[in-house]
Image (cartoon, rainbow, N blue to C red; front, top):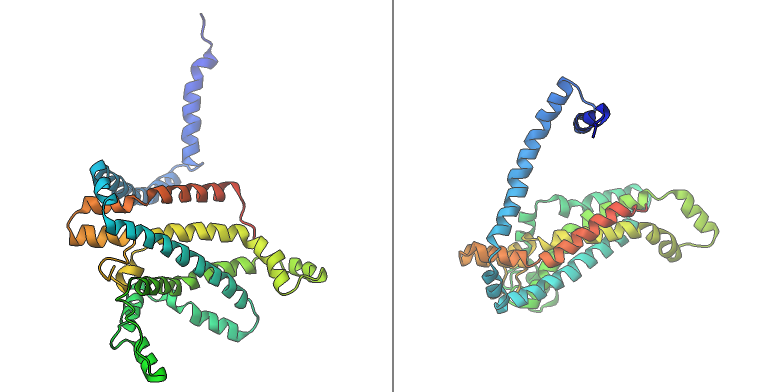
Length: 304
């Protein structure tokens, strides 16, 4: 059996083509500088993303941890709290953001001034924001209860001493903090819709609510779906809203999965493996969301 010279040369040619592909057409010092800039980012990504993720999976790989987690009655309440927080926290803030983005589309300098004031809660750091809300909700001398007493002469409720009042307060704080962020994104989506489409819809009689239902929302539907998936993923890992507003109280009744694993199991009980297992129990919900989001971004074009 004879081997042609062309067949002998194919592997080096393939290796050379692959090398040229990874170089991206860069030659000499350009390739050297490119490597010098990329290597630190790769090192940071491996050290602060890949390694902690793999180490966390290793810490939570013991099946006995999940037996202890699922038999904990506080964990079951925490799952309910997390689902409630996701249902209200995601949908309320995105629905408000959708409506407010339409309001800020109005022409005029006063609208732009209001938008500047509106984004301040998002621009302010989260720590002083949530701590301020915590002190405002104090049942004895907080701002809200003092206002109710001075103006209406009634005693306000103990906001942070009831599970549902405290959980609702944390949801309100989260919505108040993050609604401006999603509003700005949806406002950018509205601004990218060509005016010719609105002019054509006006000729066909689509004005007011009809224009929103049959023109604006269908064009923003894909963007709204992507933002919903992103907001759900972000909220599953949210720690600040509950920890700094309610602290997980009263009696560990307002914990989310993120705060239960970190605050109670890691810090108070000194069981980091158990805390990792609590956080990892959200993976059955998180992984499908990530897959759906990746498929949506890859196969569907966001219509603006």
